[in-house]
Image (cartoon, rainbow, N blue to C red; front, side, top):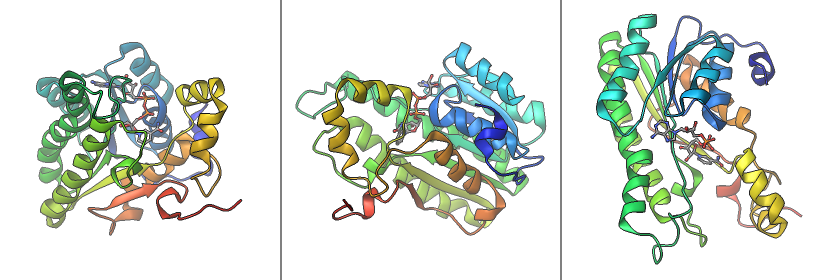
Length: 264
Ligand SMILES: NC(=O)c1ccc[n+]([C@@H]2O[C@H](COP(=O)([O-])OP(=O)(O)OC[C@H]3O[C@@H](n4cnc5c(N)ncnc54)[C@H](O)[C@@H]3O)[C@@H](O)[C@H]2O)c1
């Protein structure tokens, strides 16, 4: 997938802007690295997976920074790298997250799994916002996009309890930051993707078509999202086209959360 292919049409809204992306080595983060670079941004690709993160940075002509988003010093170094390399921090896409199999029903999920998921999905967003904000405040400009999920808005009987709770925390934190820093020219939004057609999901559902069908029936559009469709929403939130969009739960879910029944 080339940068041009993911961008679709030519759109250059981020020329001269610097974007930091966590979890840039795979999935939504990778598609977003392509999209933001195609719109002219300098992209800093942060990931704990050195090989995938480096490959992403190379593919988009950006900079790789190895980071464990649960480590405060590494997170600070990530944003410092962006500033020292490109001179500004304009966009923070705080996106890295996990959904491990041992995070399940509350009846099965132990405290260790609960805490691990909270650390990677929620505490990381706190750390990334805390590290990005000083740069943005000095500039009087910035857009922070924190990846939550549609499950922060809807309940599921097939629970991943810590994941869902962590994403709810991302929503509440993003809203409050968006309000607090609005008059300093900084917008903070939570992105709520619906299920995305990732290799992992495809593999899972190829093995169990009944499970796939059970989920697809709830999606008015009738399919999962493509990662580049989520990336397009991030590009909008990162750019000045969304200058009056702030403190939102920005749903990109194909209508899932709006549906009572879906069309046949
Ligand atoms: N895929 C979906 O259907 C979906 C739906 C809604 C929300 N989300 C959210 O979108 C985000 C991205 O999901 P994805 O499907 O692209 O995931 P992915 O697994 O494809 O990519 C996640 C990336 O984050 C990195 N990462 C994991 N732990 C890290 C850590 N501690 N420090 C730094 N990097 C780390 C991984 O190495 C990987 O490159 C996550 O926050 C996820 O919860 C995904």
